[in-house]
Image 1 (tube, helix red, strand yellow):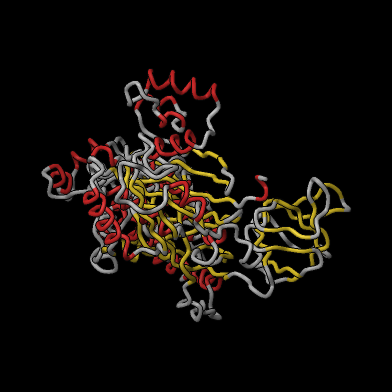
Image 2 (cartoon, rainbow, N blue to C red):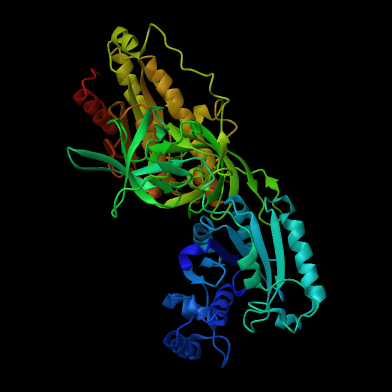
Amino acid sequence: MSAQRDLLRFITCGSVDDGKSTLIGRLLYECGLIFDDTLAALSRDSRRHGTTGADIDFALLLDGLEAERQQGITIDVAYRYFATSRRSFIVADTPGHEQYTRNMATGASTASLAIILIDASKGLLPQSKRHSLVCSLLGIRQTVLAVNKMDLVAFDADRYAAIVDSYKDFVEKLNFTDITAIPLSARMGDNVTSASGNMPWYPGPSLLQHLEEIDVQSDGTGQPFRFPVQWVNRPDADFRGYAGTVVSGQIKTGQNIRIARSGHNAKVQRIVTADGDLAEANAGQAVTLALDEETDIARGDMLVAPDAPPETADQFAADILWLGADPMLPGRDYLLRIGHDWAQARITSLRHGIDVNTGDHVAARTLQMNDLGLCHLSTLKPIAFDKYSENRATGAFILVERFTHETVAAGMIRHALRRASNIHRADFTIDRTARAERNGQRPLLLWFTGLSGSGKSTIANLVEQALFTAGRHCYSLDGDNLRHGLCQDLGFTAADRVENIRRAGEVAKLMMDAGLIVLASFISPFRADRQMLRELVEAEDFVEVHVDAPIATCMARDPKGLYAKAKAGLIPNFTGLGSPYEPPENPDIHLYTGDSSAETCAAQVLAALRQRGIAC
């Protein structure tokens, strides 16, 4: 019977202590879905951890972590399966605390309906607004506004109506197609599974009745065929298959498919499972597809319907929910995962942020943890995707920090960016190799990094003098000089520092194309940005020089008087004081200028250049 019922995935969300876990616990209890031994254990736990006096605390049924029970909050997402005679359900009970918004987004990513809880005694709070925005961005279109704890406001109809009006005013700009408001008391059971005698003024359905009756299409069967390849199955020389899950549409033996990225077509010869071959596979089924020919398909490729292919692009616009503790920095490189495919990606610009209190677009330079915004991104290689509004499975991605491997953002693709499609790199007869041969030298980027006052520019100047005297073609690219022209529009926030280094790197790359040895002196405090430079100009042409001096020495020198101004509060975000400096972990050249003269350090750099075959 369970297999014949349709499945509804829904999520409970809202602000902390609005009663999400209590609601689901009460729902399971009234449906008779809690076993006697579980109920007895719940009764014991209620006396130990509960907040409902002598009554059973149904929230403890969902809050399984010890930390959750001790603090009386939900931290992780708790999934529960249950069924009635009319429908099967999977519910994700998500945390209300702002710091766990990432967990809430995880639960919302697979849900078709959201129950937004609001405490009737508190009204609409910022976190309820944030969760509504996240649900809208994640493609949820049908919601239940559950005005909970009506018993705390004496089941006042006017209070309920005021909350409903304020919520509908807020979500008017969002993409919800159906909002059903239900007043209830999860603790007392009012309007959870049956009509409440305490609220005769409410004529609508109970929560369970609404969940059983609402029409939600969520299985992806009617969408075009999409099959992200998870694994190439090659047990022997006689079999080659592609394992994964059909995320949308269906596939039959004998049908044609296309490899999205290459555009190559093939025919499905077999649909293999552990229980034998199938004639067809539908959305949600994990299978292995064997084709009628061997072709170049790898993990991360997507097999698709030839007559309805996805978009393939390396630039696109996406809604971003920032999850990282460190702010989002345009220009910084991240790793992007979409399906089973990975690509190096960069947020090229933040078009606007979103005010969680109003839903309005606001000007912003960066995103902090739990902020929302619209960004433009570029990837190092083309990726195959659908618009998130058309296919949630193939339009969603995550961003991962390259060094810590922390997931820092969840993204939903809006559309490809076509504006750069007619821009092509110009090729000239005289190229970098020809210029290097004419100059009789190998182009190189010497990147001097260190705190202000460590001696970067002084040492770079001495090295340039020696190279120039030896007949080398070189140029000193100094951070202060660039800020008088090319970078004069940038400040010293983390986002501006990243953009400053990105621009400097692009200029240095052009100078290297001209055959020059470039000596760049920049504080460049972030390790990720220096790694980006190494990859921008080819690793073997990048020499990272750490000009290392204790901050006490730099403050004592203070050649520009900057430390004094920073200590007086006149320069915010000053590296070493108000902003961090991430020293190189394994620099190509390490100079200790606290106890060595600039001349000694310059000689050390020149010796390293001679080892690289540069006469100086």
